Structure formats: structure tokens, C-alpha cells
Image 1 (cartoon, rainbow, N blue to C red):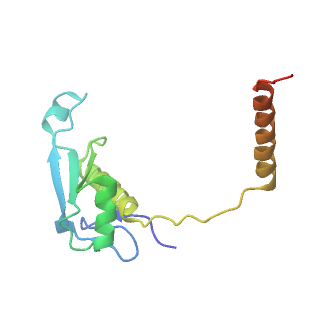
Image 2: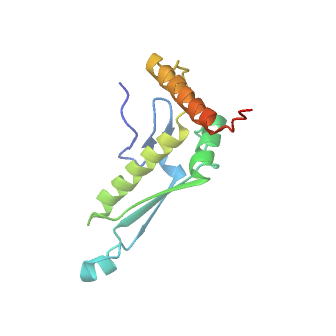
Length: 144
């Protein structure tokens, strides 16, 4: 069983068995988180915003790049500011970014054709008969 998408300790992103994004392709910025918390929240730079430019990636194949751009656009961003520590927010933002990218590059599951069930076919035909009777009753009769 493969492990789920996650961020590694060195800042790289593990997406799937063969796709791992190096840390130098992910831009990480820190800023103040805002919200309640007084002076600490206003001065401490604990919010982390991780950005990945899909079109500039060297590790994604052309098909993966096209799927990702079609699904999420040319740039994927993830931010975390719910923790008081910058390191926890960094790992949370990178994990979230890894999950978003993994979903974006995953190939779509092919549709498997199925047959309608017997009861659904019978129900459809019965509804057709009922509707036909209603329409038949609406017709103008010419009794001469």
C-alpha cells in the first residue's frame, strides 16, 4: 500500500509512487496570521503560504501538468495559520499542498458501462405506458 501524499522533513512533497516534488520548486512565504491574539498575533510571523507553479515544474509529465492546470490552474497555493508555531503551520501548508497536487495530477478513473437493472427498466416502461394513457385521454375525439 502506498503512503498518502505528504510533505517530507526537507520541504519536498511526496505525491505518489513516482512523483516527488523537490523543495526548491515550492515557494514558501511567512506572514502575520491576523485575527485574535493581541500583540503576539500581530507581530509574530506564523502564517505560512506555500505556492507551486505547475507550468514551471520539472518533475511532472506533460499529461500530469495538463491535468493539473485544467483542474486547479497554473498556480496552486495553500496556507495555514491555525497554529501558533511557524513550523507546525509550515508542515500543515505543505501537507495540504501535497494533497491538492496529488488530486490534481491523478488520472481520471475510466467509466465502466453498466446495464440498467430489470426493475428500473420495468419502472421506466410502466411510466411510459401511464404517460401514454394520459395523453390518449387528452385527445379530441371525433364521434360522428
